[in-house]
Length: 228
Image 1 (cartoon, rainbow, N blue to C red):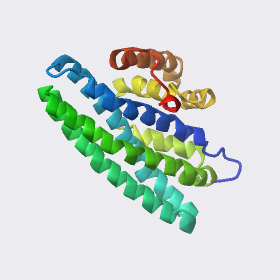
Image 2 (image 1 turned 90 degrees about the vertical axis):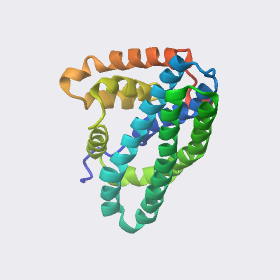
Image 3 (image 1 turned 30 degrees about the horizontal axis):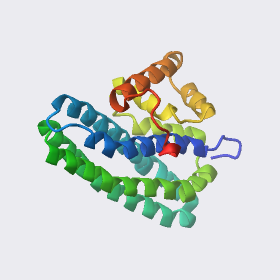
Image 4 (image 1 turned 45 degrees about the horizontal axis):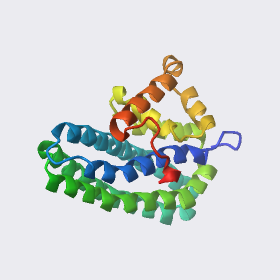
C-alpha cells in the first residue's frame, strides 16, 4: 500500500453494519407478530431472516478470509489482539446464527406458535452478540483499517464475500445497505461495479428494497437503525 492510494473509509463499514442493526433488531417482533398457523406469512418472514443471515455470513467471511490477514500483516502487534477478538466474536455469532437458521427451518415447516417463539428467542440471543461485535469493530478495528487498508482492497473483500451470493438477490442486498448509507459512499460503491450494472443498479436496488420492506415491515421506509 502506498501513501498515494485512497484509504478505506469507515463509512464503508457503517453501511452494512447499520443494515444488520436495523434488520436484526426488527426481527423478533416480526416473528412474534405472525399468528399461529399462518403458514404463508411464516414463509415470507422466514425467507427474510434467511436472506439477511446469508448476507451477514458472507460479510464476516470476507473479513476473515480477506481483511484480517492483510490487517495482521501490516498492523502486526497492534492488530493481533484485536483480530483474535474479532475471530472469537465471529465464531460466537456463527454459533448463535446457526441456532437461528435451525429454528427458522423448523418454524417454516410448522408455523406453530412454540416454534415461532423458539425462533424469536434465538434471534434475541444473537442480537446482543452481533451489536456488541459491530460496536467493538467500529471503535477499535475500523481505525486500523483506515490506516492499513486501501479502498481498492476493501472493494476486493466485498467482491470476495459476495462471490457465492445469488446474483438475483444482489439488488435487494444493495438496497438494504443503501437505505442508510452515506450518499457519497453509495456513489463510490456503484462506480466500482461493472459498467453495465452502474446505470441500472440504483433504481433496481431502491425498488427492490421498497417492495421488500412493504412486504416485510408494512412500509417502504422502516425505522432506521438510529431510531431503534
